[in-house]
Length: 276
Image (cartoon, rainbow, N blue to C red; front, side, top):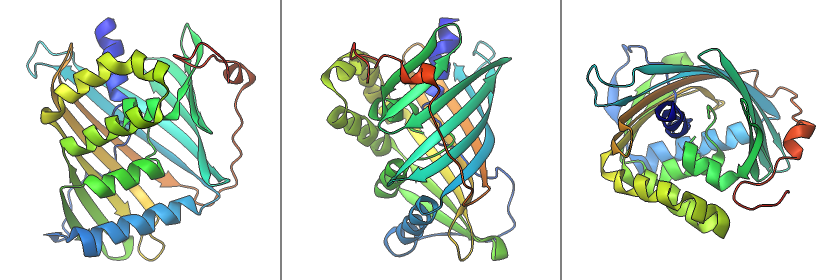
């Protein structure tokens, strides 16, 4: 059981995963990062942040082990999400189902709230959540900018009226920069609580690789689909970890209003020993 919890924790280290996963007859070509890829990413970040709100749905599959029959098998999680852009920030509601269990989570203000089955609501800093999850069906603006800064190689496919499909290859710099950002923004209590986990991730950074696939609309630059495949080798207590998350965005510019449940508002801040 402990192994499964570790797998799910690292899985939320994937919560940024997307794309069609379908074959494409469109011609592929390497793209110049400075003149083509980064401007298109910047346009997409801006276009999504200017919407009043939008919804997403998809799934995530994850596995860990030695890669042979002795591995832990594959777990699948179904995800639904709503995003409200307000006052320069994005509040998010997330519903997840896996193995007959359902849980809810919120990104609200500077905090991440999650209902843990059998334990109730937990609360952690947004920086702590993002470094553990590197992404939850929705890639935040900060994470997308970090991707833009650390992408190693990009391939672009012209999808005609559907827009453009970008395939971005990421390596250890993305993981290390994510951990560095957490160290800069998290409080001392949270950093102390996470230090062992972060050190383990830093040690496994050489074995980290990720492929992010984005389908961006023609003209409006809105993200239609996203897929991220992550692989980490030699993760302590897990072996080789792999995950693939696929999400589709819809209901662009929807009027969405997200409020925290009263129980979540009362949750104590993890590692701080006090409430908000």
